[in-house]
Length: 279
Image (tube, rainbow, N blue to C red; front, side):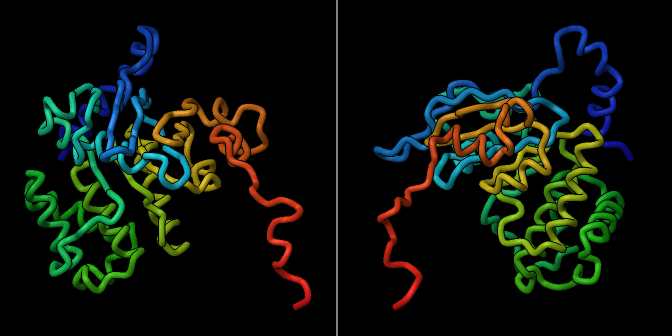
């Protein structure tokens, strides 16, 4: 059974050449003049973003840069003080039902229904999304298998490890086949085996023409996964573009990132002179 997201994606793929000749496809996400303040602190300071469709996109920045706040506003979890957000051509705040039908979200610190088993959680999520029961069962079985959760599908989520929770959360976010998937630090606290399983699923997902937007402060991970990057610091966008454009002449994304955010070593010849050596 092909759902609306699959149909829309097929139409976009069939018309990609024509769209390119007409000036390029519409962005997956468009952000204009987005602001968010918490008391006297400005978390996001009037940012503009255009995230292209069909890409693996990294939103990178140091801790406290405003990444989580930005993703929360883009996905409708947090109302901005000012600005406009469109996802798949629909205004997040004027047309929330349409937007939420087209996106999947795995926020940081996601609270799951812990007294459900993994399979029950997916069944519940699928029915909330309006999918037929048989289709939910089929997709859940495939996702549980690919994410190496089949052996734990009848275990309560409360007994899942951190990596297992991330994987079942990802499965729930993917179940309705969204056009755009938003992930906030999806690899944080995840063991290498689980991380590889998540990575393979996401790479397969983007190859189908869908869009992944994920936040991270680990540059090596972003450089190995992403083909488009936005760099954020102190609530502002410092650079955005393809990985090659953002990296520029720097030997790595890490070097380019440190230059963009103005970070440098705070150690001097005299600092920490007591550390190490003889006692």
